[in-house]
Image (cartoon, rainbow, N blue to C red; front, side):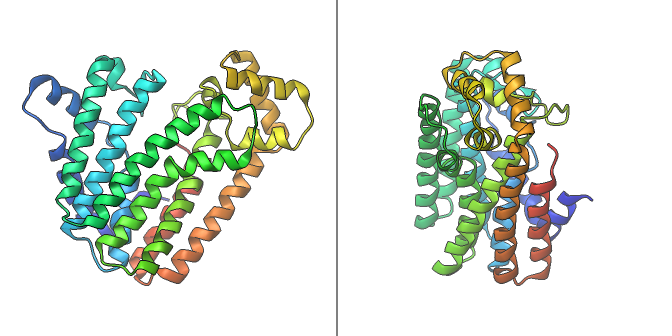
Length: 325
């Protein structure tokens, strides 16, 4: 099934307008900056976050210039955060393409990230909507705090599921939550409608991150992410957290502490990955993802009246659950 065609059907023209506006915002006549921005534009991705914002606006009245500038602003903020994250993580690749810091250097990456962040703020200012401006500014603070929380959690010897959710609510889920809420705000939805849209976005984002985390326990050229990559970076995600907290294997707990200490090797990661699979960690994560999916579907059934948008959002939820990369 071609999920993306189903998802974008009600907003095809709006999405094309967004892409033109987004690409034009990532252009400059200064040689090096122009080159780096072109490098970033080439890894456009599937635009799942702006698509969500456009669909939510469509649900509550229609896509406007306010929606479009909001979507560009949020996607630029997200893009800037990824450029900076790659510097922090010393990552050499992003979406199968060399990262900015790898292609150029850390100085260029940080400065270009700053330029994109400023461009995000400029675009959201074009909305002339104080509520949306405040929402996007707060999102930037939340994303930065989420990264710091994740770094501090590496040094925390406790292995807790609630901390895992606290981190992703300030990272991936915060972005989806903002897309859903701002999309609704841009279409003049009521406070109660915005509240429900925001919760839908958060549930969708949590589900999206759980699926991403499951990928890390399997080899796949499509995913482009080696098994155990999160563990190599000091991160323990939902599947292994469940396995560790529901079994009594001291040796595995020792390996988990080595993950947090950054001293684990490739062979030990493979042992911990296999342990997670055998102890039902993947099954548990799939079950939790299904629970969030059901909450998303309840929102769609109760709060989405437009038939085309309902079909698109249903396909969106199905895609997040079923995607394999």
